[in-house]
Length: 335
Ligand SMILES: Nc1ncnc2c1ncn2[C@@H]1O[C@H](COP(=O)(O)OP(=O)(O)OP(=O)(O)O)[C@@H](O)[C@H]1O
Image: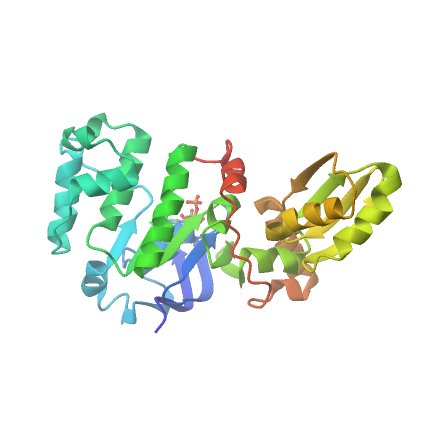
């Protein structure tokens, strides 16, 4: 039974069509990234799953239950970090966690949750009105964890978090998934989703334009990782040959003074090792990842050109654990 199933979901708000016939399946046990630019319809989709908003057409099932008919039962099994969550300024962090506990008939350990989300234990007894944005975000994430939910729905969970907070958030996503929870989270930052997600959907202008692993998306759009290696120009051809020997390498060419290798990001180190094993000194190297913009551009171009890149599924099964890269991707882009 899938954790989330959307079938032909359309949502119109007066003259704005936020979702256009969205079909999407999130399998039980997945960490699923929901990626799209501002205004793509991510929050509307999540609001439909939570029955905050009703679809104009189509249906949504959560944990095998109809999102409209059985929203109360669903909510007991969900952990939600909504966009624009409401906290009560005059209540403490502890009160918030206890409230969620009551609603879910769970008995949360506020100290343990504070530790997990990186909130000082002393802050639990402060009024939330005095929290910084990041502290409020950490509390809201903690509230989503109460009661060991079967499904976590997180809308832009790293919003307002510093790089350490964002790393902690990803760690929590992994831990929750290991515990058995399915995790569905939206983001407009590719680096956020790629280090933790099994699969990703790209939503654009109310339509799902791709569903795949991040590695698969990169592969399908030919915007994969480029490893640029500096070696002595006399050794460049031999280095290209050595790189070609690495199975994950899709291409290695000499461009000017550089060796440019198209390779899955997991295999970067194998390429450098292969070059050095061939007796060639690597003077320097850098990697160039496709940005979210590149992927969007590639997908939207692909859509217009009707190339296979726009089809869902397939692709490589990369589960990149690129924390460092993800943190780079957050630089300045985080909200
Ligand atoms: N209550 C509403 N009334 C009218 N239009 C709405 C409403 N909610 C959303 N929309 C419109 O639906 C579209 C999708 O918005 P949505 O908030 O779902 O996007 P999003 O992908 O979550 O964007 P962001 O990354 O900016 O949060 C936008 O054009 C938005 O203006």
